[in-house]
Image 1 (tube, rainbow, N blue to C red):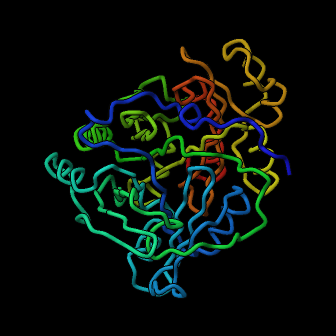
Image 2: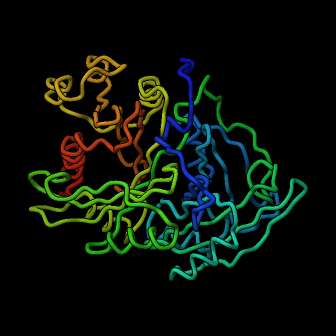
Length: 385
């Protein structure tokens, strides 16, 4: 196993910027965790441990007094996945899986003051799913609440400043599910992308602006984000320090079904499309994850023939980028390297991105055409283009 050796500064890793939290009406500290609702939590947790090199750090289930669900918490740096499955029929988790397949049900946010955040959000028109409440055990107290977002996605708000346990009250430390790699392949969540219906993108951009004080970071429309066959529109909202970034996509008119249309059809509505994982060493990450069975999108050789002309010199030679099918892009702040997996479940819905930033605060605009054409090739194989 190759040891990951490149230094990790998480602010640099995810493109964070300085921010005055005292002037923020809804201060978001971080993406606390991503909660997946799945048909079989044990097998899903085993997959992410095996293929993504994540560590199983906490568990709760029938053995710990949780009668309806089994939950595994996996970590890689600050990135945390909470994998939830039902152990008896009739739960909201089972209903979600029946409607959507395995997917993301919650993008949980760490905030400094849950009660103040809920009061502000309610004043801005947000729908409060759970009023503020506390959970406690021998490790301390956690304050939580929940807000509704697009589709059935929710944002649980968490203040864990008075808690020192393995995850949340009710969870116990867990043993590794598989032998762990010498180093984690990624160290943080860079951004989470949501797909919404036609005409709804601006509504949800405004939601994050009003309710959470997020800023509109980027906007991609028209030829920025179109191929010969399909198109979409995208805007990126971000928390004050840019540690939490939510690109939002909606379909646009095209000759054929876009990737957003396909997602909305197979997921059964709006939801989280992909999660970008920040890595300090994308080459090692891709080599190891591919060896463990992760399938990545393929990029044609022609892309690499001119890559150096517009992306410039990167720390990874073009020959290695070509070998591993890693994409590169450069903007006014620097460059980035990125690659995308194929969907990680039977439905063509959720997939992942690996991203290594070197100054760039962007999202790989120069790669959109190559990426979407690669996705369209997969859509055509599935008969969905």
